[in-house]
Image (cartoon, rainbow, N blue to C red):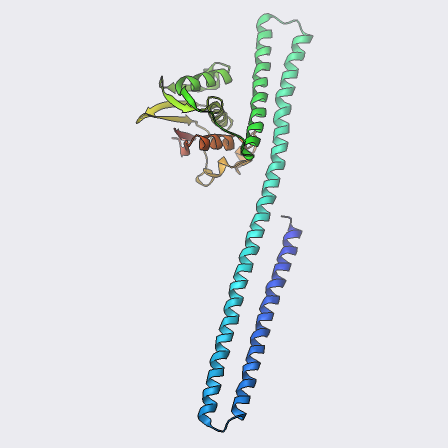
Length: 319
């Protein structure tokens, strides 16, 4: 909400509240005048002091009851009005924040799309213009393939986020060897030797789970990419899958900047980007963890974030 809109909105609400209080005061005064006139009439219409005092006392009670009623109903109405104003203002503020987040998302996606396209173009142009040896050609083609995979994943994430938002994402469960699915996904997507990516796998064999084999890899990829992205100084990612009480437990550990307790829930919101200076400088669209949480919810999987030691975060997924 702009400052000008906020000012106009505040003035309008203030005017309504003041007008309402003034009308309430006038109504109480009018009621007081009516009761006073009735008391005077009662005093003039009888010569018996007892009757006069009784009538005046009854009218005073009615006056007090009417004042309490006016003030009580007015207070309730005023509180309802203020609560409604608060909710409207909160909703407008939220919509404004969401609009800003969407704008930032579009800018981020545009940048994220341009980068792999430009990199792939450069690799292919180099291959065409220069007569390179086979090893160099292979290196350039692998680089182009890596950028293509990155672009493909970005498009997949955008499409999946749209499906989630429109409640069009459904799951097809089947009995899966979760150990093989996790290992194959990591090795296929992060095509370089994992040692170069500083990713270590600690996967117990033959852990089975009933889930969607098309959606679950998005959890693995987005969490590992997130861990790499926010590991500024030391990239050290550990992927652990083990069985506890016959239930799979997945942990993605990093040695990165970590996540504050305040943001451990909000990081799963769509378009959310951490407010710290370090994380603002990183690339990203703010939909990766939103997709992770949505897929977990569809599978009734619990995901939580705990602090890693000595630094970093652990994304813990209990199947």
